[in-house]
Image 1 (cartoon, rainbow, N blue to C red):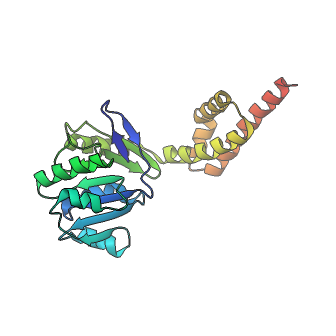
Image 2: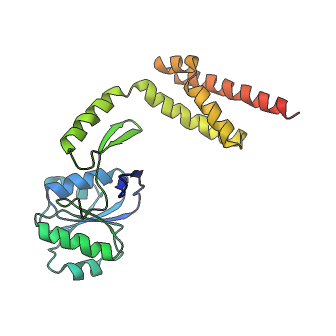
Length: 231
């Protein structure tokens, strides 16, 4: 998930096991909730009615639905225990959303009001997701429609070779940490592997094991050079 600072900085934030409260069980609340659901936070939704999507997520054990109408915002926020890490105000009442956001901030919550970006601590950018590959695209709220267009274009650019390269880099980085304590050396080897034509060729053909074996050979060459220079 991505927090948006005043500097317009996109930050990849881990919401796993975080407590998230959504006030509003309709379409907007459901859409925003889906942005978080894959990170497996603890989600409670407060509303007098719930969309079919929210009911399905509840049956799957992924969210807890609480039949409740917020009449007094201060009392409601005080009653939440534990206090949520994130509160999403997604009712069809703009004044209520604004009050929920303002009061939750007093208690240190990160807030998102579906109809008021100026009160929100973060925006939910368009995410281009292919496999384990994610790119966040934000227009700073200027054009959500254009962000969706750009997301589609970016997804079309990501190839199977790119995804295999990410998988390869993960294994290579873990091995390098065990062999080379110096970060600069590790970075140099990683970029050599990234731009190695033979390795790229294997990945392009989907031959991951051969690409990995060639990467290990490159690492062994570096290891021999380092050991030789230390003699």
